[in-house]
Length: 336
Image 1 (tube, helix red, strand yellow):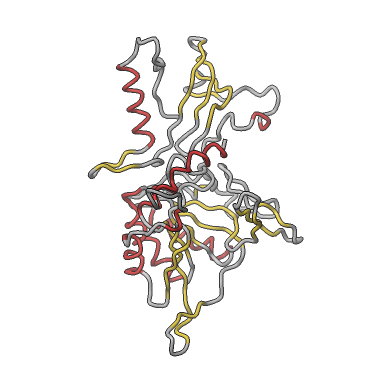
Image 2: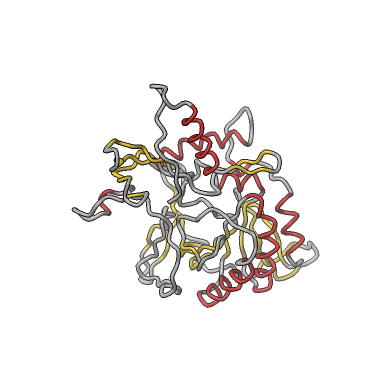
């Protein structure tokens, strides 16, 4: 399924040049986010472009007559990351809330390079394990991580900011923008035969373990979640993503108070899965389309439309065309 999503994302190479395929790392970025960050960061920090990101790093001072910045010690190779999720309209406000805290605590981070890159990160064709990560913050150790994410929570919890759910992570408390996972900061890499790179974590015994960005939260076996005893709102699991994950004899997942029985998946995308099942009221087969809030956003004037808006529109259109034998019949529209 993810390979299909990767193939669908080929159109992204057309964002850079209208005649040739080019990676997004070659696209010139707008100054919108860079200017906002430079306004908030001390002079002892620098911004560096890397692929679709802007990396904010500390420097120790100025080296010699050249004036070239000299970096401080790099962060560790792996640990708990904090991810900040954002809808397009809330990005600059989240900079105001988050960046001063990172600078004050000397914790480096990266952000989407500009609004177009944020749109790509949250687009329908983005791999689900990578989506939603507007900012990635790299605490140097677990104690700093625990204190920093709580500080950011207090700074943002009463603000009118929100972002899409980061499927690879666990939500911090009831935050609408803060998530975390354990992963690589500067991980070992391996070049694959297709030109892509795989990244790895290193276990306490020195074994290399794949650093996978899965569409659900999972910790390496040697890592303990420091918030394990605290309740955390978990994402809805794709009920048919892996039929082997459900023990034999356990009933299929259901929706709408048991009315719709989900029996399998047709496809997945970052905007939501498409499933097949049975309507236990009519006993007829159904297709269930999911829409994830604040994914696949686009803006027209002062209005932003996301996957949920588009699904509602699709339902309304099907209702208007109801009765035509070549058009699927709309059954229900609901929030689960």
